[in-house]
Amino acid sequence: MTDNLEIRYEKIGGKMSLVAGIDAGSTTTKVVLMDENGVVAHLVVPTGSNCKNTAEEALKNCLEKTNCERKDIRYIVSTGYGRNLIDFAQDTVSEISANAKGAKWLNTSGDKIRTIVDIGGQDSKVISLDDDGKIVNFAMNDKCAAGTGRFLEVMANVLEVNLEDFGKLSLQAKKILPINSTCTVFAESEVISLLARGNPVPDIIAGIHQAIARRVVNLAKRVGIKEAVFFDGGPALNVGLIKAMEDELGMKMVVPSHPQIVTAIGAALTAMEKIK
Image 1 (cartoon, rainbow, N blue to C red):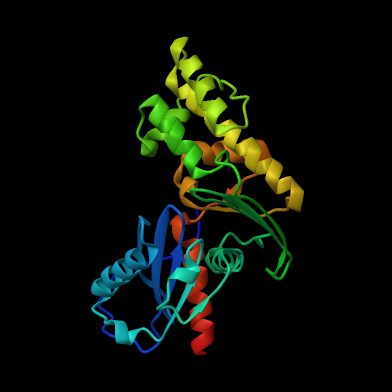
Image 2: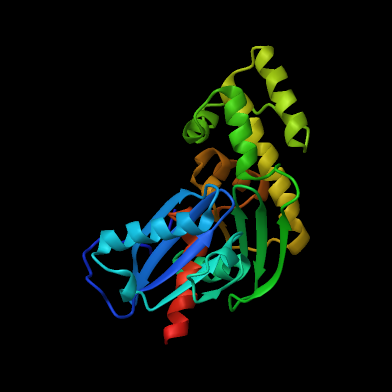
């Protein structure tokens, strides 16, 4: 994992260049505070039933970390699934644009990012960039839970394993047990059958990760896969899924230290551009 993110939880006390980016996702809401030197605070919280209230509370908590007040924020940009519901933001930006901007800013790998894979709670996206970091094409899976964070949650419940343990358990697998169905409901039945036959849980989890990786890589092939590949979203915290993705791609990926807030950083960078 590599990036230039060094979050400074210092009491900055009302910097005039303070901006906020809010990524209101279907599963989690991410808030980032930035000044001209970078990220000063961030928070990731469940979105719940009212994303506006969730975003306001998260923003308040971030401000408390930095000893700032709402009046110290010069500009707020929202993005994500619920961006238009964040009515206290001065502007909105698409999650595709914000994700690309955040990934470019975070990347310190030495290689230009040409492909971004973003796996969210309810969808997955692949973005193709040119040499200048501009968006060339993108594809999105938002009609089916397979290949998303929700798929992982369903499987974790079936296996009665904490989602946070999925990654390290899959690395203990002796072999990968394939999950053949591309439908979450049918894949759930497959996992139950594998479990009933006494198969080791790590081997099943490795198969689950492989199934997600194959679905996402097939999505990526629609836009074209070029190195370097940047991987973000909550599931990018899962070391087992990272391995499955890299095995399926046949290449290493650039994974940021805080993959959930990449798009929120992009929204904050957009806000910074507005005040300049």
